[in-house]
Image (cartoon, rainbow, N blue to C red; front, side, top):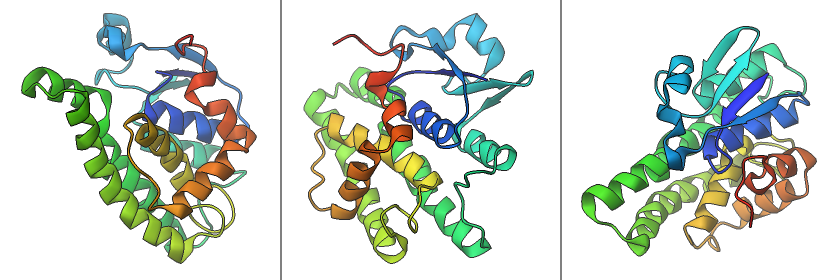
Length: 212
């Protein structure tokens, strides 16, 4: 498998976490969103939407991280990232979607670029924009974790919800979003920071990461 992604992309990050949790071996091909590499003819021939990630596998190309995560769960079911029982599975998917559909799209690179270039937003304004949606989403997620979590977002093992949450925590910290009101989310982030699969997926550890 070859994962085409960007080291700091939340969608690429969540896909790396899932691949690592499954114990799968994959190569990486960096796509620098800042230079427009995602709009190159070569990349668009593989992913016409021009977004990351894209996963090459068995002669096929998979796009859209939620679809990739579901494919991983279906084709490599152990260890599971969804519970066995149908209602529990729906709850985990809802928690993952809360991040992937309602928070992340509003603070990804292309949206922030549009805020700067079209509306003249400075860094403080873009940080405030991101925080607005992160905080609203995290308030709901914190309540759901209180109901269903036991060390992780749902029960006592990592699920697709945690794959989506941890990159969003990383983004929140980049945008200087205060997270003190979310002790359960912070506890999961701390636990993930000590987990090898999450450690290996961290943006700073990727081959295309900026050299600090």
